[in-house]
Image (cartoon, rainbow, N blue to C red; front, top):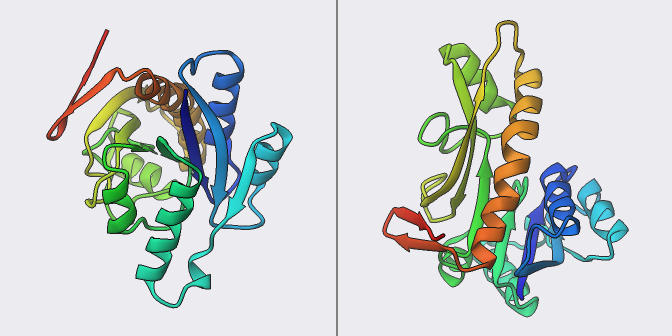
Length: 208
């Protein structure tokens, strides 16, 4: 049984999707053992506590140098015996130390079909604003491994979501979460825990 540690910063809707999937028995070979927040007031911590999951807080501002924060986060994850780290709305940049320590063991969910509308600065509503501004007809979400390139790690799963006439960024954000993010993130986690994801460079192969 793999230990899943989820990193959060805010409301924790993606965390809730993972908890719900776990409670439905969809994550068979793993268990969410800890939720770590960059924000001590994040509602995601309450979601974790309501489900009997251990919590911790680590704030970037508590470390003078980024390297010290990077080392502290790495040590914290290692102390929790994390087999898999999931970024579920974690708004603090990960450093090279933690990325190297957990190579191909950090999964992020991005609210667009990478390589579209991704990279530095593309998070939250801005992703959906840019998609609408560009006039694309389909958007979606991507579950991917994290490397040192922002949104540049190997893609695990993607799911498309149609854009409708009259969509606002807020409406589109909600549809992408409900129809894509909350479905493919738990599935990607389940596949990882069952050792069904093979990584070859930038390409992933899902094992049957």
